[in-house]
Image (cartoon, rainbow, N blue to C red; front, side, top):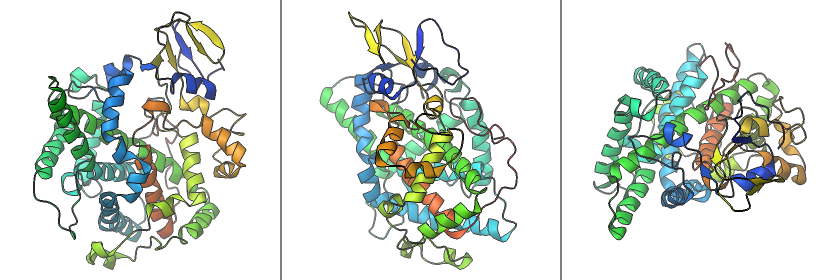
Length: 432
């Protein structure tokens, strides 16, 4: 195995790998997760996709919701388009416009976590049942303080705490909502897309198999809370580091703005009067057109490489085999061995990413052959059957936010103290 650039120690029954071939063997090969996930990521005493250890039950539950997180579904979703139009024009732009008019300073991490939460909760539960963290600053700060405690607690210690109760209340509201009248064609409301898909599929599965299982609401709530946690924190971290890098490069901001102005329609906010007009008449460019912008893609890809929001080990367990397991040329590895890779090390291979500690979006303009090699080593969202379910949702949301900001504004750094990444599983700035 290649030397891994990490300070994490290794035990006698543990292997750390750092190669694209090893990723294929371990993560595309369906190795079960290490028991640590069950110890840490269970909500409501109920496993979710992240904390399920075995491959088969994970695969069954993932299939219930994977379609609504696919790239093609997201780019064509009328619900997500409505969510995007309303969140951007009724919340995001008015807030940035007020900031711009009154001094122009914004805590980017705090605000971008709010943006991530509002997008995620609206897609999960419908606009009327989701959060308004962008506007409700007081509750947002209170919730984020509660969450700091929550994520450092074991499942049994955080059970029935404020964070779990908060998510359960949104699930109950969504459950009532899905049984209410159908939406009108001109409604600003949206369906509870993910909640409805998972809840109904679980109910149908329970009826068809006639097998006793945990209440559907608890299974669904555990899954929804995991999506909310991932959806607000990781995208907020990524956007913070991206804007920090762009803020040091005015010329690159100009180049990005020139590219963004080619969108049809461009994402131009006309100021305070815009908020008073009918949001339904405002439409963003298609997600496909935003996704196709090369410079925007390079900037986001490079940020995800250098500042992976979840850079830590992703442990698996080798399966038992009479002849042992072979990983990257190492043979006779017995079953039950903990094996892991991590994005931090994979993304710093200088043979694949020259000057790996430098933020260089232009590296993604390389030849097709070189780009393919970099993609083999790119692991911001994992790989295989356990790859991040919401990666396409996160990318679509982040590209929209970046496009909205840099079409209308320039950014510069006011205070960058504590920007180095924390040595934690989810790794934001040490300064918070």
